[in-house]
Image (cartoon, rainbow, N blue to C red; front, side, top):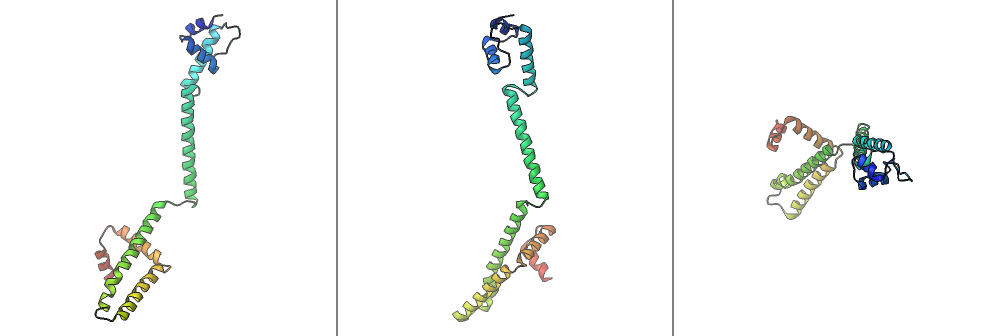
Length: 177
């Protein structure tokens, strides 16, 4: 049997480190203050092996926390993938592209209205100009509001994507042909 100082020297640690081992429960505290050197050595080596394997001590706790977060992240990723495959989720990028494409087409159609009706309005009375512009804008808005408009825009976007990048003038020429 040995004193605390002798036991600390036996396992090559300081008295404060030995006290820390006692506080953490690594070494079983003896009420008599006398320690079996073989038992102290076994307990400290078991603790050090546990820490090295990532199962004990502060380092082991940190490693365990990291592993837990990694497993949780993998589980969340798998759940998202399952929901995606089940049709409960959809990727946002294609929807953003379709909405942006639709808005560009709407913008272009509305900006084309003055050019389309300008020749009709030359030297006309104000009432006739108003009626012509109102009719052209309402016709364009009706076209945009039609149920098949999103499908036509999507089809035009798909055709543009498959044919490669080209200018709107090229599309107008292809449409005329």
